[in-house]
Length: 577
Ligand SMILES: *[C@@H]1O[C@H](CO)[C@@H](O)[C@H](O)[C@H]1NC(C)=O
Ligand SMILES: *[C@@H]1O[C@H](CO)[C@@H](O)[C@H](O)[C@H]1NC(C)=O
Ligand SMILES: *[C@@H]1O[C@H](CO)[C@@H](O)[C@H](O)[C@H]1NC(C)=O
Ligand SMILES: *[C@@H]1O[C@H](CO)[C@@H](O)[C@H](O)[C@H]1NC(C)=O
Ligand SMILES: *[C@@H]1O[C@H](CO)[C@@H](O)[C@H](O)[C@H]1NC(C)=O
Ligand SMILES: *[C@@H]1O[C@H](CO)[C@@H](O)[C@H](O)[C@H]1NC(C)=O
Ligand SMILES: *[C@@H]1O[C@H](CO)[C@@H](O)[C@H](O)[C@H]1NC(C)=O
Ligand SMILES: *[C@@H]1O[C@H](CO)[C@@H](O)[C@H](O)[C@H]1NC(C)=O
Figure 1 (spheres, rainbow, N blue to C red):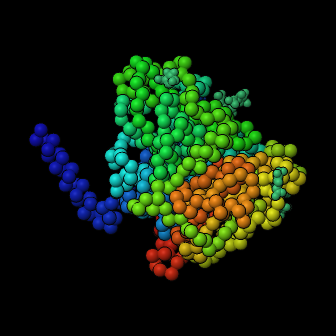
Figure 2 (spheres, rainbow, N blue to C red; figure 1 turned 45 degrees about the horizontal axis):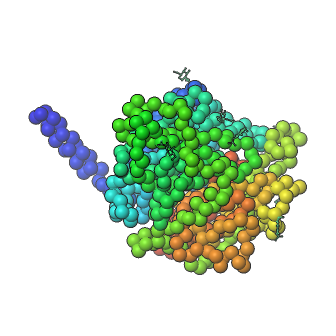
């Protein structure tokens, strides 16, 4: 007993001493160590070396408090380049810590380390982190949870038990090779072998029943499910058998609560829902949780369903997976655009006094951006596996984005302005019936470049994202780094600049960092460009980013020192080795 007290006392003194000694980072600095390393993991009876953080798949959860400074030292222990992105963290003035390779930094080379330093300011809830180099995010991802400093605006205790549910995709082979092959031959990627919930496919795949996520819950209690879609290329529907979900937060922003039988979640998005254990459990029953894709594409997708279970405490003590489980009755069908539309249209910002919705009522700049898939003729000396034996690309305003080989942010900061040009077109090069043309028209060639959109500090910006029928109209999740935006309108067909703005929601539109642009339709987003730096804007379907469906915003410094980008950190990875 005495020895134990002694030990605790020593521990307390040593903690105190550490805090006193390291006086420069303030006491609310949270430090994390990420080792990017290989780990031999088996799913579907296939063992392979998987790129992980600290050997974990999914990676470790980062949990911090609102207002904390965060230091994550990423050490690259593999013979590949890597970077990490803190998806949805605003990175106010700290663009150097944002992570997308060649946009805000050059990669962390083999054996090298970089400490990402940033603060979480006025943000709370569920975000996530993932690798932002090649397709490494297939396995290098985890939850980023910000505990609020103010009570929930719902009638809930602040410490409502929470359950992270991270959706992903599993390939039986090395995912970087899947991307390399896709880029080499210009075809579509091999689709994944399974979808996963918390890294586990569940019983619907060959040889996978033992890899099933089972969550125990206590009857009568209410839980916060923190749902993250980390899948590479698929939007997903999700439902829990016999339970209603109440949405309370999206992309780390509170919403007006609403009950729904299921959700649609695009890659890059997060959705917090409440679930009350209100069923009378059978002695052996477990409740199915299921996710399957929302398909709007003619490309080959794996249309399978990943399954996990909720079990009530004291029921089914051995976690026996019921051999005759059934899918939740409320799980939407694969092509249920009606459900997806209805669900997304129900999302509203909380817009309370404490958590206001600061949507710009007027704008300084309006930009219209078409989203297209493209085809390029195959060079005579190559074999191409895209449609009509051509090569697939994708574009915004007909520019297929070429990633430079140096960091745009560094080039911008040092006023070198090499590797990119600030002349991204603010409207499509020519107007046509975007969603009315035949999906396969003759000239689907894009132009190629690294043209960015330059914005003075504080610009109130509207971007209308317009899907096109080129090749295949599709729902595209467009992610903006460094800013949240408000989805003020969405619809099908072509955006009508005279009529559609009359229907905008400028009161309580949903605030997000990733918008699902309707298949064959448009979404209008508004934001204030109040974060100096360079910010990647791209489709979060990874195959589309690889094909060039991306652009960057360059937000200039403001007048005040507090409106300026901080200088680069000393350990920023160099652009040449
Ligand atoms: C992974 O582990 C399994 C089982 O221990 C082994 O059979 C396999 O060879 C290992 N694979 C790799 C790539 O190391
Ligand atoms: C898709 O899922 C099924 C399971 O339903 C699996 O057997 C198959 O290998 C997966 N992959 C592809 C490319 O279809
Ligand atoms: C869920 O509800 C259905 C239909 O009401 C019922 O048949 C089924 O047994 C319930 N599932 C469980 C696990 O209780
Ligand atoms: C999934 O795809 C397979 C193979 O293309 C097809 O046979 C099956 O009917 C599809 N399942 C659903 C639910 O669409
Ligand atoms: C085909 O030719 C082009 C131009 O001559 C060259 O850049 C490219 O590398 C060649 N491709 C292959 C696969 O050899
Ligand atoms: C665009 O094409 C669609 C489908 O062919 C057609 O219904 C629509 O009227 C066209 N819109 C315009 C403005 O031409
Ligand atoms: C896109 O650019 C290419 C190359 O300049 C051109 O051939 C094509 O007509 C353009 N297409 C559109 C839709 O702007
Ligand atoms: C890794 O990053 C360095 C620095 O930017 C670059 O020179 C090298 O080509 C990259 N390697 C790969 C395989 O991308």
